[in-house]
Image (cartoon, rainbow, N blue to C red; front, side, top):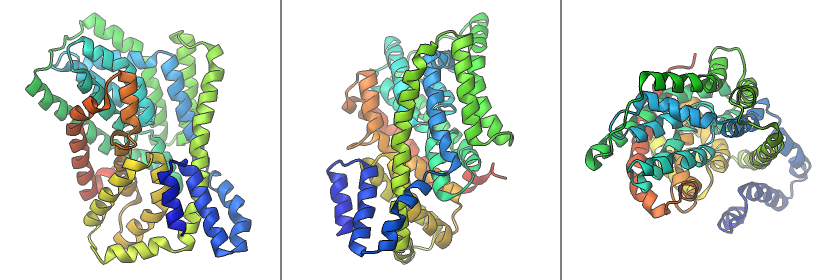
Length: 420
C-alpha cells in the first residue's frame, strides 16, 4: 500500500518533500510502531543539523549578489578575450562564461536563467539560430552541478557523510572533460552550419575586459582556493564569497544597491527553505527505507544480474535517467542516495566520490528532458524560444553528456585523482 501511495502522490504533482514526509508517516501508521512515531520529529530535525548545509543558502546568496552587482556581464566580456575571435566565437564565449559562473552559482537552474537572459539575444544579433543559442546556454548550465561549488555535491556530501571539500575536488576533472566535449560539439556544428567568425579584441580592449573582470574572478578563487588550500570549509568559503560579492558589487562596480538586499535575502531564504525542508523529510523517508532493509534487498537483486561495478553503474545510469525525467534533481538525489549508495560501496566497492559525481550529472540531465525539464522551460522562457526548437538543437549536447557519463562510470580515477 505504501509504495502505491508514494507513486500516486508523485503523479498528482504533490511536492516531493510532502510526498516523502507523508509516505513515511503512512508507513509508521501502518506498522503501528509507537517508537517510530515518537522519533519522527527528532529524525526530521537531525536531517538538517549538518553544518555543511549552511553552504546552500550562502552559495545562493552569492549568485544573487553577483547578478545584481554586474559581475556576470564582466565575466562574459572576459571570456570574449580568450575565444571571441574563433569561428562561432560567441558560442565558445557562452560556454566559457558558463564555466566561470559554474564556479560561483552552483545551481544549474539559476545559471540557465542568468545566462539565457544575457547570451541568447546577443547570439541571435550576431546571426546564430535562436534555438541553438538557447540550447548552448541550457547545456552550459549542466556544468554547474559538476564544477565546484555544487549544491548537489553539498547535499550528496551530507547524505553520504563524506567531506564536501573532497566532493568538490572530485568534480573538477569531470567538469573540465564535459566542457571540452561541449566545445567539440560546438566546433562540429559550426563546421556544418558555418557559424559567423568572431572578432578578436584589441590589446587595449582585452586588457580592460580582463582588468574589469579580475575582481569578479576573486569569488571563485575565494571558494575553490580556500577549500583546496585547507584554509576554509566549503561553508566558510561560501560565506567569504558572499561578502566579497557584496563588497565588489557595492563599492567597486557600484551597481549593487544596499536597499535591494532585503529582497535578495528573502528570495534566498525562500529557495533555501524549500531544499532544507526536502532534506528533513528525506531523512525520515531514508530512515524508513533503512529500517525495512530496502538497500540490502535491492543489492541481492542487482548482484544476481551482475557483479561488475561498471555494469552496475550503467544500470544505475539508465534507471536514474528516467527518474530525472520526472523528479527534480535535488529531490531525486535526496531520494536515491540512501538506497543506492550502500549497494555501490558494500556490494561493488565503488568510491562514494565517483558515485556522487556520476549520479549528480545524470540526475541534472532531467533539467533538460521532458516531461519535467525545468531547465528547458527556463531557457525557453528567458530566451523567448519554443521548447521544441531548443530540443532539436540540444540533442548533440545530450549525447556528449551520455558519453561522459559512460567514461566516468568506467574510469573512477577521473573522479578520485585529486582527492588526497
